[in-house]
Image (tube, rainbow, N blue to C red; front, side):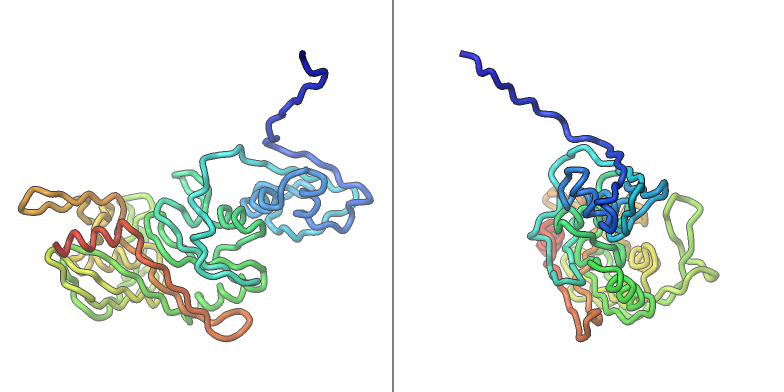
Length: 306
């Protein structure tokens, strides 16, 4: 016997167009979207932080922006995609002001031509509250990345990085052990390729200290201490030392290594890992965060030892 009732499932909307009433006045933008748009806190926050929300005809990225009677609000939502590469196991530190994420390879710090969700949006969806990017790692680089959870914490942490009060340590795998010490070479755009950097005496001052931790049977494991935070800084400085990152084909690194027995190591990304970050916390005191080496980095290290 057929039921007289039929359940109809409608797909989630891709765009919301709403108008605020007198009863909505005083709500924050994120609260308004949750209440009137019928979407989750995570989806609302992610859409705003991504830049998909428009309040009174202007793009609004602040989830706490107030909504007034008569305001027109439009939000572009994204259709459900593949599972997020960012799970709670990636959280290295979490408090009311700061979150530290162990960024996996393949995730961009900001939206780029390769597409896909960027780290702030993924983190916002994971926490159900806004997360603001403080510093960037390249798409292929793994490890510690800090995001702020409030506007005031964001401003504080940006100033810490701007004033070079942050201690950062990276691990790198190379096929040629570099000269130890400090590389002090300014960097600027390289016209030979989109997004590439090169040494340029008129460019931005860039300084990195290098130490060889272990000479492997093939290559070396290197500790890198960037004192400035320029785009591709470690990658270019290692190339200038004649020791490009393994897997960094854009800067002369090898994508594979062969052994005498015919075995080959294939590398799909530059093997650079942001191991640790130390800096002042917005609430006072010190914050130190450390990320374990990812599996592909550890496996490559062992292969180069053997």
